[in-house]
Image (tube, rainbow, N blue to C red; front, side, top):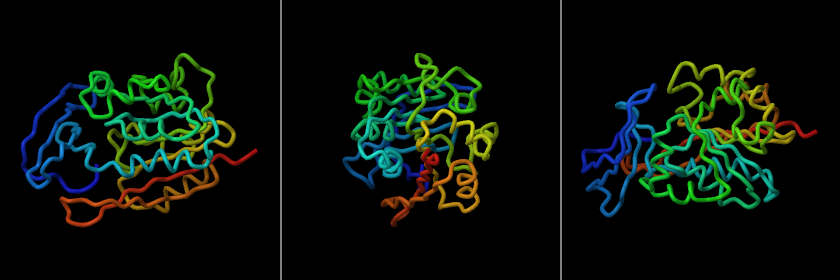
Length: 248
């Protein structure tokens, strides 16, 4: 989640579960500074993970990541379900035939299937969308069966990734291997020959990370996505990285 912590306001807890990563909770916030706005947010222990108030970059992750295909038929993986913004926007893009969303926390999938989040019914009810409870990092490394266990040999046109805060700010230190050139090359084996990997980051464009992406893939672009933040009183920004396998 981008921006400073929200001010004190009325908060209703909609979901809570203890997980190996910590206590995850879904909350509905109504802030007197933003009358009439329902703000859905997810916390892991005391850390804010995401807020429905800030989803411009999550939407852009899908739009920018799928733009290279120009509406051609695409098979998509989304790493991290969250509040569903990337998955829902991917489903809205022309040519998308399927979206496999890999989420490590079963509670988050349950929130969507029970309609506790605004996009829950839309994402979980779309026949093109499959919600998979699994470890994205193990699947990306080839250490587990497949992103979609029903299609173990499937290669994907795009992987849209939004789990850690950034390649440097990780939710768990065990995720670090994924961000190496070798880790990214392992992921690339599950892409089509001209496939795309797109990643959301809470930080500004990172030259060192761009160089790592270039070593693993080839074509690299970093897009700054700006959006208003009423808590800061000015615009904030996230970054969406888009890289593509070399064309055969």
